[in-house]
Image (cartoon, rainbow, N blue to C red; front, side):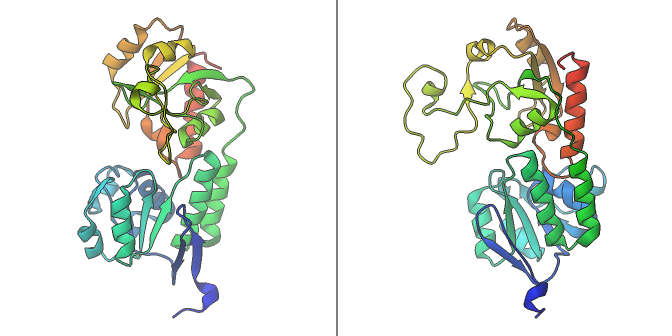
Length: 290
């Protein structure tokens, strides 16, 4: 048993203390953005399992066995891989699957970054868990330094994540904070989700949401139009908006450009963050929105 002071000890998003006797060499990642981050910081060879949605790094990731989807993890398959660390996300993975992995005695780190700063903090935790030392810390510091302050001007942007009904996100999300760093203002930043659905759509009084997540409001076209976006970005995930959706939104009569954008850049935290901000800022500049 290694000396106490050499152990890796940190707390995850659930408030649980995670203790590793040594840096994790065998990692199963249940989160696409975390899979990408492990590969970028420590190499694909550290990964012994991934979900079917873990697509990056393209090509190299194909050699890593698939253990189900993000919300349909094959727990027995994970156990058979004997990982030293399992990476999960409080929002992205099913609570039952994560609980089963923890109950089975695996070391599970549950993340939940909801801001750009949270993304950097997650990377620092990953550096510790993987034992990447000063070199890993320097790489994270460089990524953080690449995030420059947003432009003085800001344009109003609408980003849906689903349709029928249309759904978006408020200020308490990673994507909204990312938009702010790129120089955009999320037009639904102040709009929490209401319950039931009829209340969210403005058709009935709202009820107490209790402990339910209210960060993803559902909305009507009329409400979107009333908030006067200057740019509409249609991501390709979690809902795969396509050219037909661009035409549909253009028919609303908004005084706004409507463009498709990478969902990975909007929603994947980790090593992608700095580059995503730069690409989104360039998109705003090209569309005349800055």
